[in-house]
Length: 340
Image (tube, rainbow, N blue to C red):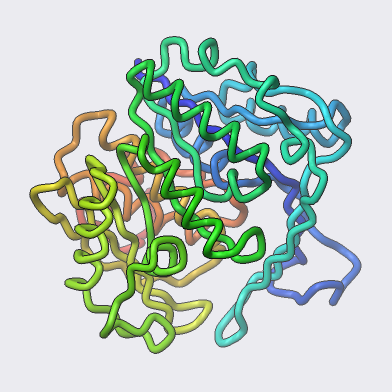
């Protein structure tokens, strides 16, 4: 069985009940999440042998995060203990015309204080076939840039496929540094996952006629994003997600995959959003699963987009769906009828 390694930060996620505003009541729900951890959980649910690598404090919060991952079948033996705290993010879920709000409290977290000495990538990648990270991780500090660079070089040396979701976060770094760092890291990347905002903010690739805030999408422009990225970095594959936001609650969702020769476009989904955080990560996991299992381009983009569509209906960062559920939706069964 193919083994996948993902690397990044897992955080404590604190969310008011339902769609309440921050401190509208005295209670918040506590779970865990983080881009690469979300991908690992999705892949484990799909039956993939997957390892998540990070650094967490040796206290009940850090150990709780590890136990949570283990409960989904994620291999955690390469997680390093150290540091004083687990990063936290607060999420106020949007609804209708009120947007979601995400506030980070992750400075001085365990992984942010990690060093290259913490991770033996030669050992970590032994027997692995795929390595996945996102642009969030190097945004955490210069030490993480160095760690990601070493991980990518070692993964490339050992013949792993490397995927990266650009995931630009303006609260973590500016566009100039993001462009410089990700241009360097992407030289080792085989599969790039991006949306139109990432392409513009990180690499300066702009679309002319689409208006994401005005809910106008031109798919031909998104194909051009994929083509330009593919040519600039010689990616084997580029996947672009297309989100048309009519409100926080109603989105249209689709994806495009480019493999240097051909474009593949998924069906469109009309989403009634319950929780959109982790939607892109579930797309990435669906794409990785599809490629590892030899799906052709059209089936791969259909599976990835369907997996993400289902995630939007599930509370929390993690996508709690099976291969069978995703394939059923990807095959066109969108009725939502009760299964008896």
